[in-house]
Amino acid sequence: MSDDRDDQGRLTRAASFVFLHTEHAIYAALGILLALTALVALIDATALTWEAVRHLGGADQILEVVDRLLFLLMLIEILHTVRVSMRSGKLTCEPFLIVGLIASIRRVLVITLQSSEITHAKDWSPEKQALFQASMIELGVLAGLILTMVFGIFMLHRARDDGKPAGEESAEHAGS
Image 1 (tube, rainbow, N blue to C red):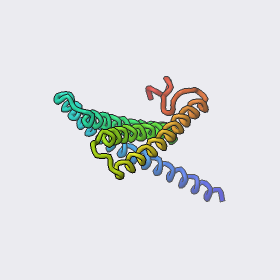
Image 2: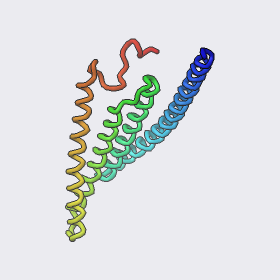
Image 3: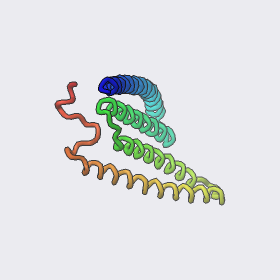
Image 4: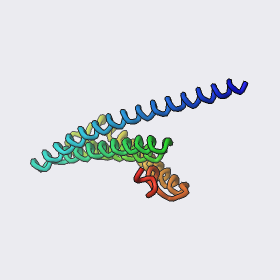
């Protein structure tokens, strides 16, 4: 009877070891792919920024540059989440709230530019009016979503024992 428990204990430990290392390998592969994607996005954003500076880009080019930079920021935040998850073995929700916040802000910028183009158009048609009204409703929903995510992040910070943002390493773990 004792041999059965020892066998089960060894089997459980072996399975746990295999699953943990498989999980870490997948996290590492995901991190590498995210890092490569972020590097490509950085190169693309650099080229777009250079073109906008060279040609004194208009609002469309500037919005595209800001959009790419915010996308890059989202990738970096997700990469940070993967790193923290690998290190701590825990998945925290704060980085996802931050990514959602950045994505919402990106969308607000796009809607604002599109609405600006609609309102400056010479021919104000019923279709454009309907599009403008839909854009304003979407902006209102995004504003509520942004406030909710900011409140959620605030509450997460208050709920933490040490008051540090999720994923921030203490001095004793920074070197390991």
